[in-house]
Length: 437
Image (tube, rainbow, N blue to C red; front, side, top):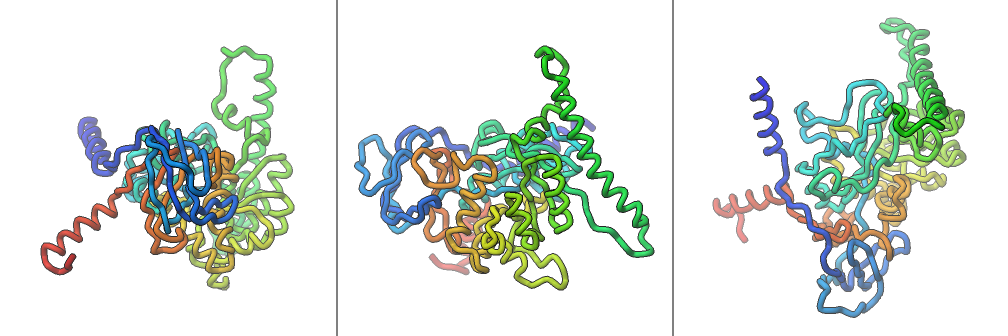
């Protein structure tokens, strides 16, 4: 039986592994000339050159002198963007959602704060090349399941191993906020009083755990380095102390309100993830200075009596109210491969009232700031990492084609499974004389 299982795992890893070769470190300066630079931080700069060396942007100017050691890329009429950033995703943690052997985002247990997402990240996922082909060069991968599923990691869309691909860890500790709804149906299996008690108990479990962490931290002061350590407690200390944020997954207004009250009582730093009803609580969120990661705009309305544009217009409503936010895609395991659609989610928000420059910022610099890496990525600025791409048109236009991407200065392989299949069947129908050159 063990032999059969090992053979199965070997075969499936071969079938579901991409054949792209990760890029080597940047070995020579690269000068991109005459492009339309969407810097995000300083607007659009048309006809400018961009130079980067050893993975860092070193100069942005017009007519930068060339040298023999440079690789010169002409980008006249082309658009340059910082790499897009998905704030929430299960990319690399699941390959085929219907095949249990390819799912690695849900640990056993209700509270597993010591879990770190990056160690389960599969750098050979077929979805990675497809994702970066649409300009998404960074993904914050998130564990799922239970009350506290663990810590997320910001991953680069290139690298031989999960260590190579990790840009920043941890980005946050995640909490799946308890469901606040009550089934009032007289025929409900659980009495209303019991439902309310269960809901209160879930929040009490969180309070008890945080109290336990504080006691543990006090007990560790003055102890020797060789003393026994509790990994669960150690993982939570920087979050309980407010050094790092809790990302609280909450969709309904009652969940969001309860999470905000809880964070104030515990003096915690939080970010709301999902935020379907965040548009109804803009005053509370702004006053509390709590950012929101919107899990997709391309969604159906949440309720039967909701306006059809409820999800499309949510970013504009948050922006107008002064609430910090970024746009991501659905972070569930079932939608892991759909992170490639990130620019389309931002484009839909722009079509429903969000200014174009803010829509672009919501998937670049705003996401970087919420994830704690705004000083490294998210905009085209001297000193930041050279993680960017060249596209044929505005990236928020669905017809735009990403021609070349660079991650930390390395020129990445732009082939992917979709492109290979397109070429294959294009050749098939040429041979059948159904299409002509």
